[in-house]
Amino acid sequence: MDNNLNSIAPQNKKHKHNWIEQGNFLACDCGKKKLKLKQVKQDIYSGIKSDGMKYSVRANRERIFYPQEWFDFFSQLKDNQRFTFKFLALTGARIMEAENVKVEDIDFSNQRIVFRKTKQRGGDNVKNKSKTRTIRVSRELIKDIKKQIEEKGLNKEDYLQILSQPACHIAMKGDKKTNRIGALEKAKIKGWEMLSLHNVRKTSENWALAIGVDSMKLSTRFGHNLITQYENYSQSDAFNQKEKDTIREFYGDTFIE
Image (cartoon, rainbow, N blue to C red; front, side, top):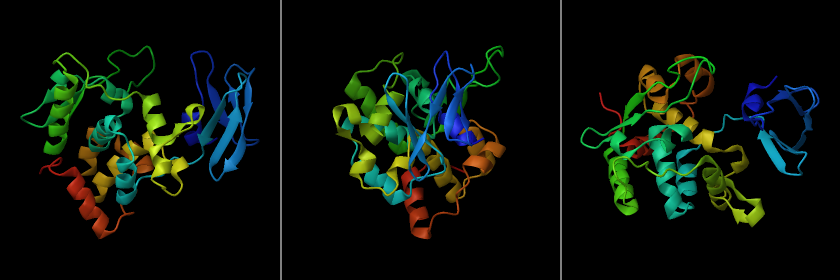
């Protein structure tokens, strides 16, 4: 069984689908539904749901942005999309965590952000599943947050108005229904189909590891343990010196000794 495909299989409240490697299909836990997949490109499979809607899954989720790819992608985003993606890249936050940040969660003078709603662990019966964590960010991101607050007229109880996950997906990959082309394709990034919102978070941590940020600090910052980091986020040797210099400039004064 491929855990990567498992984690991105289409799911809803009634049915949970699991990847069956032999035969290329998704089988529902209820035992009644089976969704057949067809390989359309390397590591990409697609299928059609019972309602006629197409979907796709990726067999490989290890792809990260190289610095030039990121800036090429970012340059193709619309103005109202850039704040969200810059926030995600510089914080490494999950989209759900970012969406739930309020103005009052920002410590402007000390360059800190509090994530109060984080990934839940341990099942529905576990109390206090969401563990609050605080991270430091760069002065540049603080300036962007202040600009967002001013432009949107936000009060301290308001959320920062981060784009939703579907909106981020459209920004990245476009929308076939409306014939919109996503920023990844516009940027002409090779293998852009293998990049998604999760890969922004993966890129953020790999970039930080590449410039020598302590692994323990990063596991706390990203809200997962070291085992998860080593298994899924360790490609820190993938960058040359010029790229590492670019990454240091990107992070600015995010990390301090």
